[in-house]
Image 1: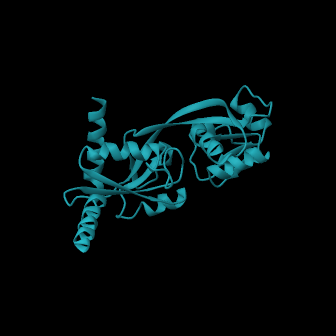
Image 2: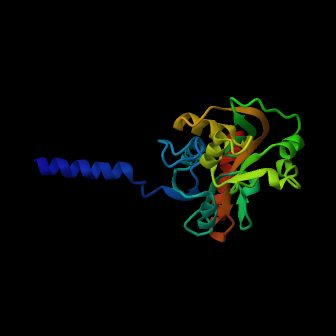
Image 3: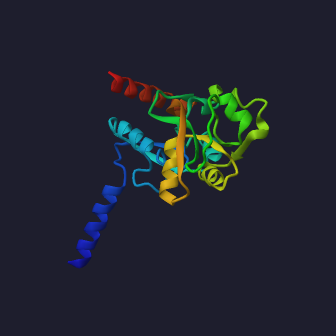
Length: 231
């Protein structure tokens, strides 16, 4: 009797945890960019959860593999993946096409809360201060135009957590990144007290979808789903 019950529980457990045979499975590559995407968050991140909920409308199961951002963009070229997400439109590489907007992020200027630093224009920021940026991000041209000629004032970090630690340690005066991401990490890990000085842009978060013949029906489907949501 006990053996029968144990076998029944295992069978039920397998049924719950595995996608239905009638479900389509989409696999994407992503990065740890809390709170938008994260292997350690229960929802795997707010943006991932939005995409997962959207795809469920068509009985599609979303699987996510997390990598450092540059590697995520490389592995997404494999036919195993639909693409990579979440990306700013500027981060959609050749061989990929951008989906419509799935979610939104922001780009802003942050500093340590105990530093009385200020600037009026972005040109003053880049010429007068050390500015931290993430080397693997493709920042919009609206920001990058001010970096030319001021490269000696830019301090690059490999990722968001390194950028935060460098800012708190005083290796840079300001950091340019998504304020939600940096403040989330600061509060989660108790790393310093930082504050948003200025919001520069609101940015779309899209799926960079692999532009292959086998992926065209998925590109069409995500366009259709997001059009339906707008309607």
